[in-house]
View 1 (cartoon, rainbow, N blue to C red):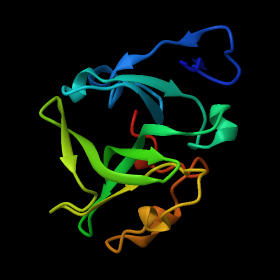
View 2: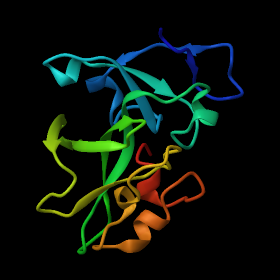
View 3: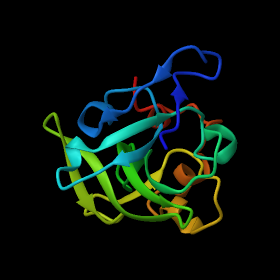
Length: 159
């Protein structure tokens, strides 16, 4: 069953249709997506945009189960966090890959630890799970500040 999401809570008249990963990540205002169709070519995966400032049942409107793409950031000790996306499987909160933009294309990378630093979510996740998802020794405040209450440039990667 496909869930119907809207561009904003106030805008209930215009449902948002699923879009391909290559068109969604880094190119739209949404902070979270549910993967509703996948295959070998990750750029062709179908994503359903989700409204809300967190990835929680109260923001989505139904139980969270499956694979989701959420706004994230790569934290390093030497500069501002870089925007990326994190793939998270719920309800377990398992995350073993992230997506970055390189030379105008989306690249899929394994793990959350990279040579540049560590990838952590930019938004809150409503399920109990691995709290270390938000811990980055490189800059501890970044994980503490993740969520809809924070206005930093990296939290809104779609400017």
